[in-house]
Each structure stands twice: as structure tokens, then as C-alpha cells.
Length: 103
Image (cartoon, rainbow, N blue to C red; front, side, top):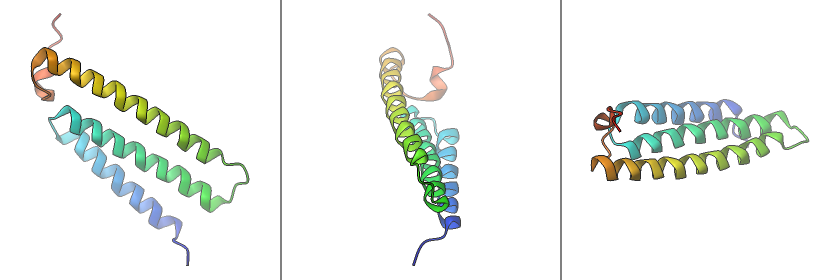
């Protein structure tokens, strides 16, 4: 018994919606970064699911997924470094307090 492609797409859409809601509604910068990571994971799930159901002989989607995972890891490392730098300057990770761009 195999799981149909539609189930994977629905799961990816739900994950993307959860990540988008988390990125747009939260004030904490770390939770915003977590929401972006969840959106990346839903895109990776779509890539691998489409590859599996189209029965391609070349694993191009898996290579794109690996590349996307590497980009997501770099994004979280850079994002965390930015959050730490902002915390040192503002003494808070609240996104609303980071609106000013003074030097």
C-alpha cells in the first residue's frame, strides 16, 4: 500500500501554512527563523515527493533537496548570528524594536 501523491502535497501545504503563519505573526526573531525553516522543509518535501512519483532515473530532485538543505543550514547559521548581534545592540530579540536603522 503506497501513500498517494496528494497526501504529501497536502502535508507540504499545511507545513508551509504553519511556517508562514509563524513567520508573519510572531515578534520573536528566533521563532520567525523557525517559521522560515518550516517553509523550506515543505518545499523540500514537495521536491522529493514529485521525484518519487514521477519515477525519474536521475535523482535530480534529491540533489536539489540536498542543496536546499545546505542553503537552509547556512540561512539558519547566518540568521542566528544576526539575532545574536541584534540582541547585543538592542538587548532584545523583539522584531518590533528593530525598526530603527540608526548607526
